[in-house]
Length: 480
Ligand code: HEM
Image (cartoon, rainbow, N blue to C red; front, side):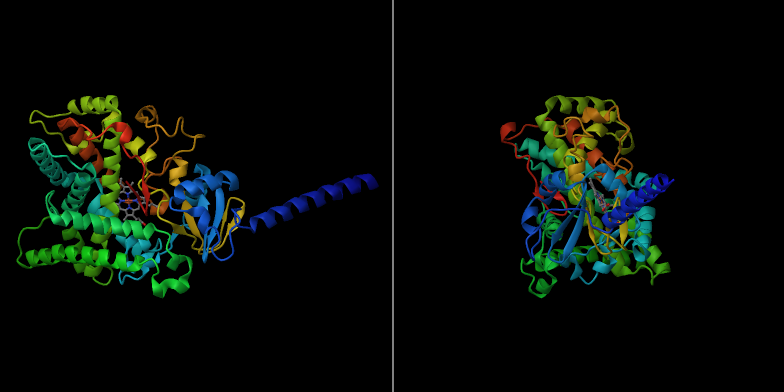
């Protein structure tokens, strides 16, 4: 009997010990590399954080803690870890940390990407969905985007006649920008020949580069007044320029409306109607902020993806021919194709998916932040911890992708995987409530550009394909 009691109490003690150990573990942040005093892991991170953190996660685990000055970040590097954050704990992990580069702007607190996922953020996302990215709205305005493509083809015809080289990155940026502006305000904002194009590109690239850069003023907030890397000043100059240009469109439209001229029926008209009825909820500053945000979020990402898709097709001529052959099946008698038909071409779509996998435009998604203390797997992560999802590492994980470093569109032909946030090994647009709201537009813009560039012209690289630079630079988006 005594022996039985002893065994029973040992079992209870054992379970108690296990539970205590579990609680102890759960109280801790995930493991991570030991850092130096004050600067923490700053030197471990380096200029390409997506690569350095992917390497570190192999040693420290799928959820890993990184510390730099006052910032503590939890980094997710596997599909399961991403699911734990973006699906199981989506609400708790959907805050955002506003970098100093953006915090200094008077209207950062009306910018979707820097707002917490509630209140005003909900209103803006709803407006975006209703007036811009809704399938029906996009269908109604497809002719405007097809016109932009015709303009691009005219420009290419001229360049061909004059035997001048075409910078695909610059061309794709101009087309993405004009498609975005036509969808929002029914007009081109730039021409392929104008100086404005350079200004726009510089402003957008500056913002993406500095918002994503490791800024000492974020890591050590006492340095904020000094702006030691000149980041805030650069961001402000770029935002001011974009604000001014956007104000011109809004003011022109207000005059147009005052004169009771026919409506354009585009996003700007809808936003102005909405604002007239709900001025306290949505005013002119918010409209300008949203337009500027869309120019920033939607142009470089879409043009970068197009540039990478074309680059891969140039170095893989057999794939180029397959896309061309497929596109030719849907060409009308007039030599034109419609946006809607392109979205159903399996090989073209596989090329686009594979491009977004191998050349992620936004490698860490946008940094999220915990809104409250939250249990992630067996760890407890305190409120206000930065959350980074290394989508770049996840998309190259050999456990989920066969031969992950090779460009193989075929892998998507037989697969159900898409980029709508349900497959956590493939997150080019993120997942959960902060997932990219521009997917339907980006999908159309990139498909239309790649299909027309491949179908209408033969291309020749101005140098050997072995000399092609396939590297990238880190910013909020990966810049090619
Ligand atoms: C190929 C093109 C694009 C890619 C790869 C891309 C990717 C992304 C990613 C990864 C995020 C962050 C998601 C997260 O944090 O969980 C994001 C956010 C965002 N994207 Fe896109 N995007 C693209 C095009 C567009 C377009 C065309 C628009 C414009 C309609 C747009 C508007 C936005 C906005 C406003 C956000 C912030 C959403 C929020 O914080 O609630 N994007 N995008």
